[in-house]
Amino acid sequence: MDKLYIIKIGGNVIDNPAALDAFLKDFSNLKGNKILVHGGGKMASALSEQMGIKPVMHEGRRITDEATLKVVTMMYAGWVNKNIVAALQALNINAIGLSGADANIIQSEKRPVKNIDFGFVGDVKKLNDAAIKMLIKNKITPVVCAITHDKKGQLLNTNADTIAAELGIAMAKLYNVQLVYCFEKAGVLKDSNNETSLIEKIDAKLYELLKKDGTIAGGMLPKIHNCFQALQKGVEAVAIMQSSKLSTLHAKKLHGTELYL
Image 1 (tube, rainbow, N blue to C red):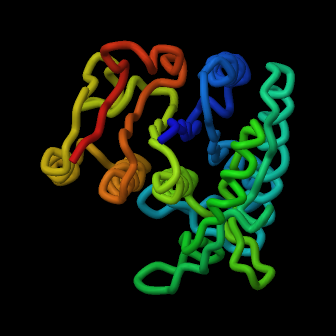
Image 2 (image 1 turned 90 degrees about the horizontal axis):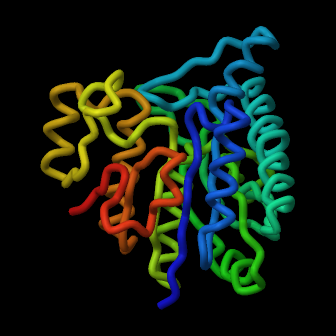
C-alpha cells in the first residue's frame, strides 16, 4: 500500500505568518501523497469579537450559533483556506482548497442536543474516499478546512482534529496512513508552560491517567481522543508535534509525542 500523510495544522501557527510559511515549506518538501487539514479557531474567535459575537467553548469545542457559523465559514473556508492554497501553489504544490461540501467529500449530521446544545456543529458520518483518491492520483493535494455539510443544504462547523482523524480512518482502506497533528508546542507536555516536559509516548492506559489528573485538558482532550479513534480503526501511525519539526518526520527519533494502542 502507498503511504499517505495526513497533516493537521492548527493552534497559534495559523495566526503567525512566519511560522505558517515555514511549516508550508516543510509540508511542500514532504515526499509522497499528502493531505493538509486546518482549522483557524483563534482567527475565527478574533473576528467574532470584532463583530460583537462572543465565542463560547465547551471542553475545547466551539458552540456554533447561526452568526458564528457565518464567521467560521468565512474564516475557515475562505480567508485561511485560500491563503494556504495560494502559498502552496507558490511552492509548486498543486493544491486545491476544499470544504466538506465540495465534491461531497465530508458529510456530517447536526449534533443532537443532549446536555449541551452545540448549535450548528456537525459530527462526521460519511467520507467520499473515491473523490479524495482521484485528486491524490492526479497529484492534486487537498487542503481541507473545518466546514462540512449535511447533504440537505446546511453547512456545519466540525472540529478539524476530528476531520483529520476521520480522513485517516477512511483513507486507511486505500493507503498506509500516517496522521500527524502539528501545532506550536513540542507535543503533549506534562506542564503546558514547560517545553522540556514532553511526553514522548502515550498509550491508551497512560492517556486515561493523564486525563484523570488534569495533565491533559481543554482542547487537547478531543485531539487525543481522535488520535486513539484513528489508531483503533486502521491508521498506521499517529503523532503530535511542533510544526517547526515537520521536516524531521523521517528521523529515527520522532521529535514529538507518539501515540499507540
